[in-house]
Length: 236
Image (cartoon, rainbow, N blue to C red):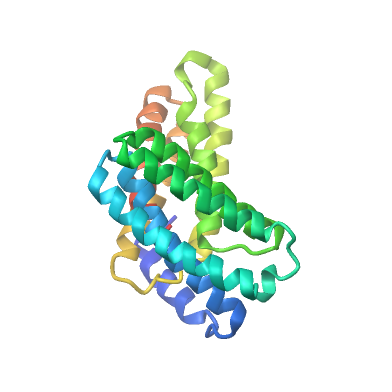
């Protein structure tokens, strides 16, 4: 991957996107805006920042309440035939309330785990209805990355080299999907540097896996999480 060309590629990709309009796009834009407050709450709770998490959760609750009220009255066209939509709306509402209680009690790790389930609910909503957005691709990468981070390649001996190569190939595929479908906010000046750092971390892990040097693999493995987290918190 030639990272120096990445920013130009993202700019061209963003320019190639069609103008969004209509109830489908409007509702997805509404959901994405609310999801931004959710991402902030998830990220801040993982950092142990109670007051900031509570503030982000309040914004998420307000936005989600508006979505629930409007979508229950008239579901967006992409979800109009989804019988599980009311359940998803109610489940996320319940998770918000549960997380707020945990934050109020000072139980930030528990609140973080509760909020992780929101990602699954919204992802499931998209999956059931054939909607794939930037956040869905980021979440697919996140699931694979968590598996990679849990591996002890050194303990597996020669098998660890093969597993690292397979894991690196999967992460590389998922990051290429993300690069090929930039976030709606790709024009933001902060996007290019963050996505470049993210892509570079995966490229480094892949290169290390190709050498078969377990020490290099382990080092690159440990460096995967932060670039993803920074991109997710801002744009994921």
